[in-house]
Image (cartoon, rainbow, N blue to C red; front, side, top):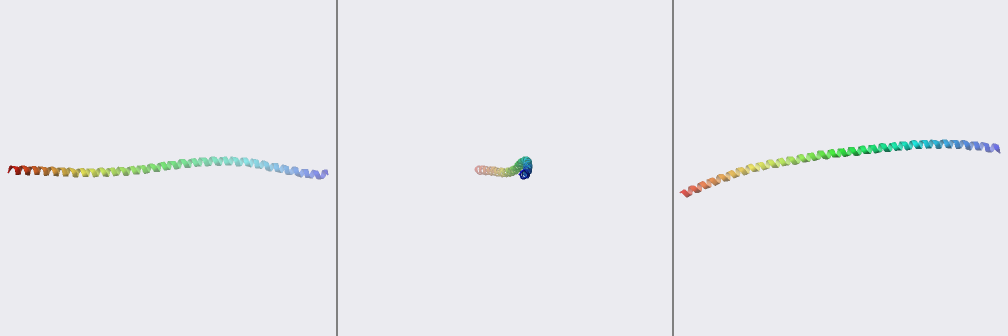
Length: 116
C-alpha cells in the first residue's frame, strides 16, 4: 500500500509544485500588468492634458484672429462713414455759400428796387 500511496503522493507533490510555479508566474505577470496599466494611464492623462492645452491655445488664437479681423472691418466702416460725412460737409458748405450769395443778390436787388 505504501507503494501505491507513495507514487500518488509524489504525483500530487509534483502537481502542487507546478501549480505553485504557475501561481507565482501569474502573480509576477499580474504585477507587471498593473505597472503597465499605471504607465498607460499616466501616458493617457498626459496626452489628454496636451490635447486640452493645445486645443485651448488654438481656439484662443483663432478667436483672436477673428476679433482682429472684425475690428479692422469696423474701423474700415468708420473710415468710410467719416469720408462720407466729410463729403456731406463739403456739400453743405457749398450750399451755405450759394445761399449766402443768393441773399446778397436778393438784398442788392431789393435795395436797388427800393432806390428806384
